[in-house]
Length: 436
Image (cartoon, rainbow, N blue to C red):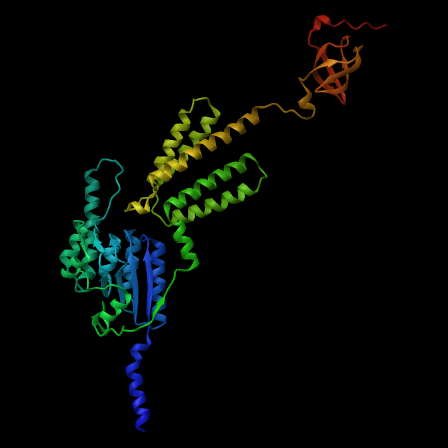
């Protein structure tokens, strides 16, 4: 009887060690794809009854909407969430600071930094108006209140956390620990879990949990194939490049109907670009600039402007690309190099293709009956009024309204079946046709 009781007691003590820690790695900007990945990872940890979720974070920042979604998932997670800024040399800036402060356990590796969470407004040289200042103040106050709403319940230094939002203050790992913005500094994952073992934490809902993390197995939770593809496409530089390739392919199909392959590739690439842009904050004024650049390229091919319209199109396309994504950090905008590298070749290719198409439409038809009208030749035998002529290197039966000697140049005016109706180029050399 004593042995089963002892086994039961041993099992009860061993149960806390039977869990797992689910690890998510976020090494990217904060956008809808990363928000979806973290949401699925937390759901997976809850389904597996994991001991904790470990989010290894390295990010320059990102979108406010996606940040709010991630923080909502962390605050409502049934499983304790650890946010760990790692590895050494990494940072959790801007949106990353908001996510770090929302965690049940906030940790950093040595040599990392965080903060600089002031909201960024894109001006691009536009003068700031009083209304812009008012809007910036509204955004700043809203995000400061958002930070206070959970930092205080997490036991963080609320005033200092708010200063990162209002004054863009940034902190090293030691500064963050000394000033109660994070809970601990750990060299690696194992050191982190060892330090957490036996610690009692207060969840956001007020409940308390004793962490049993020592020697816990770490389960990697990787992004799905869909999330990897979306993560690749959501890079605005990649999305803009795909859009440009798709536009050129469609243009080639319109100029050469029936080629099929350019048309199929163009549709696929354009749809992929639209899908990617749908995940990003797009400025429709920039879309107008891009469409105007296309019009300039077409007009350059149609009219002789000595490249002025073409240069204007390149400038408009470059500006449109730079202004296209209204993101808060440079990593989520189209780079100047990408914009220029796409705009100049795109303009040259478009003008070249358009010029070929316009010239082809202006050229005369050179086949069939229409192709023979107006062609020059020479009489092979006298036309009295019928005879033979040589046109385009071929011998034809011909008929004229006057007698034309052999060897005289002629021009084709019409066709009657397979007989050419011609007249002399030099009418003075022709003899009037005498009927006998």
